[in-house]
Image 1 (cartoon, rainbow, N blue to C red):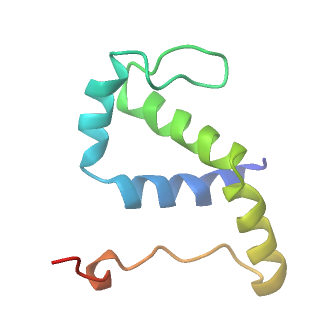
Image 2 (image 1 turned 60 degrees about the vertical axis):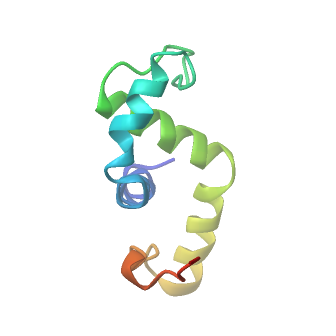
Length: 87
């Protein structure tokens, strides 16, 4: 994955998870989040990079590459304020 693609995936991870990253980091202490080398995430930055690796491995990078081929840029950040309300 090149640097531009990694940065695009990272922006989406940070944008979508936002403040919940702190709780995820606490959960990581139980060994849930590991990076590509199998080390546990200990800082917020390591957790973000682990999430980027995970989403990229599960197809997000390929989807972003396809979007880039079709539109000439990576997808914009979603507007979470317009998400459908459940209740």
